[in-house]
Image (cartoon, rainbow, N blue to C red):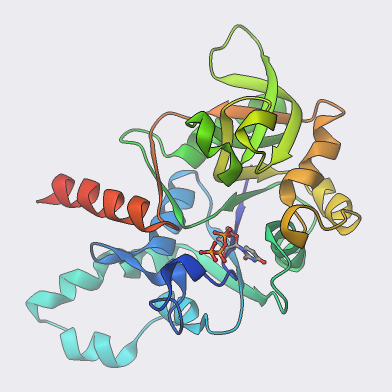
Length: 274
Ligand code: UTP
C-alpha cells in the first residue's frame, strides 16, 4: 500500500565536519555499509521498492552508490571479493531510485515539500537515514506500515528520551488509544522545546508515514524554530483534526547524526557480526 519512501538527504551534516565537507553524511559507514543503505534496506523490509531521494550540492556519491560500477564489477568478477558487492547489487536490482535537489536548505519540512515531485498524490514513508533503526524481527518502518493500515492517517515514530534532551527533537503529547500501550492519538506537537516547556518526553525520531495532503499544508507553513520550515509545524495542522498517530516502536535507534550515536551504532553492529 505504501510504495514510495522519501529520503531527505540535503542537510549539511555540520556535526560531522570536516568529514562531511565533501562527503554526504548519509554515506558515512557503520562498519562497511553507508547509513543510507541501511535506510533503503529498512524500507525494502516494509515492502517498499521506490526510493525517492532529496539531495543537494555535494551529494552525488549517493547516486553513484545506487548504481552499477562497471569497472569494479569487471575487476572483481570471479574473484573471492565479488561477494562483497552482493548486498548492494540486490538493492539496486530490486528498487528504483529517483532524485531531486533541494536548492536551499530551508529545513526538513521544505525538503519533504521538494520531494513532492517524486511522490505525487499518494501516502509515502520518510526515512532520515542518520537515525539508524534496528529490530531483529520486523523493521521499524514495517511496524509503522501496519499502524498506517489500521488508522489510514499520518504516523510518526516516537521514543522516550531524557527530559533534558527534549530540545533536540519534535515532542508530542496525546492519548493512548485502543487499549494499546504504544499508539497515541497526537494532540500537540512542539519542535525542540526546552525541557520546562515540553509537553512530554515522547520524541519524534526520523521515521514518518505521511498522507499527501501534507504537501499543501507545508507550502503554507511559515518558517518556525531556527528560521526553518518544520515538518512538526505542518503536522500540527493535521493533529488538530485527529489525523496524526504516534507509534512507540519496538527496536533500537541510534542518532548517527551525532558522534556519540555514531560510535554507539558502530559498536553495536560490530558486536553483532564479529
Ligand atoms: P539535521 O537536523 O540532522 O541537519 O537534519 P543536518 O544538516 O543533516 O545535520 P547537522 O545538524 O548540521 O549536523 C535532519 C534530516 O533532514 C535533512 C537532513 O539531510 C537530515 O536527513 N534535511 C534537513 C534536509 O534534507 N534539508 C534541510 O534543509 C534540512
